[in-house]
Image (cartoon, rainbow, N blue to C red; front, side):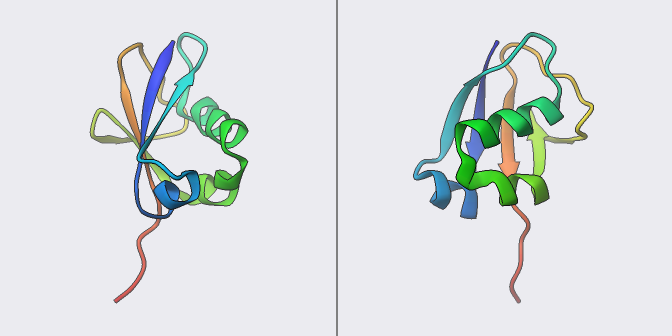
Length: 81
């Protein structure tokens, strides 16, 4: 299945764009999405491991299953004051 992943903050800067299009197996999990992100953009490895992932604007766990047409977002940790 094809999946759009929106990128924010440091992830956007590392990739040089605000989204990625990935192809994943049917019924892939968020954990598999995380691995696919790192394979497609190795510069995201450290950040992807620490980031939250939302699916259709709701935070999701690594065991959440994805469906065709879902939109995921990689949300890096926020810091500052």
